[in-house]
Structure formats: C-alpha cells, structure tokens
Image 1 (cartoon, rainbow, N blue to C red):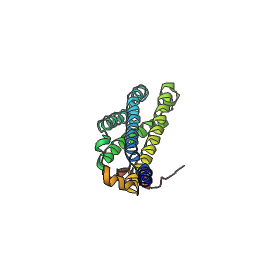
Image 2 (cartoon, rainbow, N blue to C red):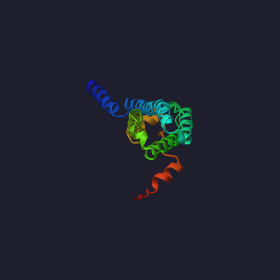
Image 3 (cartoon, helix red, strand yellow):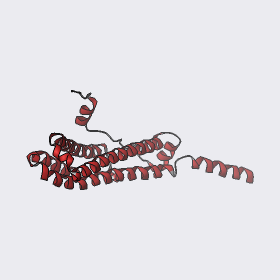
Length: 196
C-alpha cells in the first residue's frame, strides 16, 4: 500500500509539473511586461519629439504645418494608454492607430530633411534624428517580443495539457495579438512604387 501511495504522489507531481500551474501565470506576467516595454518605448519617443521639434523650428519655419502635425499627433498618441489588465482588441487598435498617426507625422518631418539640406548639416538635428530612428527600432523589437509573449501565452491556455489546467483553475481567455488598424493594413499590403 505504501508503494502504491508513493507511486501516486510521484505520478501526480510529474503531471502537475507539466500542466501549467506555474507556466500560465508566468506567461501572463511576461505578456504584461512586454506591453509595458512597448509603452516605455513610445514614452521615450514622445519625450524626444518636443526636442526634435524645437531644433527643426529654428531651421524650417516654412514647414510649420508639418511640425504642428507632429505635435498634435504626439499629443493624441500620449493620450491613449494600454492597461494590460483590461486589454482588448479594440483598445490595442485604438492605441496602434494613435501611434501610427504619430509615425506618419514623423515620416513627413523626416521628409523635410530631404527638402532642406541645411537641416542635415545641423549636428543637433542629426543626433536627434538618430535617436528617433533608434527609438523606432526599439519599438519594433518591443512589439516583436510582445507578439512572441502573446503567442506563448495563447499556446499555454489553448494547447493541451496546460489548457486543461487553464480550464480547471485559471479560466484565462486567449489574448488579442498585436494588429494594425484596417487603414494601416491597406497601406502596408499595397506594394510601394519605386520611381527614379
């Protein structure tokens, strides 16, 4: 009888170790951390933009419309926040849309450098431009990490055996994956035209 009880305890321990008791909450925590990193990188970008705008203003007064658009897009982007505990596909789309508008405005600002070469020669502008480009790369990496964290979490809550633990203990739903708003998808899916 003692051997039988010991065998049941050992078998239960093995089954519990692989069933997601710890891995599901750890994965959820990882998703929340990756969302925080995305927010952190967007915050870094929004902190840099006022400095960039001030430097550019001194060189490109004639492009005040572009600078105004950047400032307005930044204000809108910083007004939309993601709360990881109340995340939904709609909230992600709203957040992504606001950040997309800011990215478009920054793109127009970068085009100013093509029209006004004297901006490129200004060291401050080049330094800030490099920081913006670096931040955009960090945002991309943070989004990639978030996408992977969501995939891992969704696998844990939907693929057996951990999904059985989720059904019995946690009752987590699949989380929405990072996605572009429909208007952004249309732009991305269209092949760019290259003209010389």
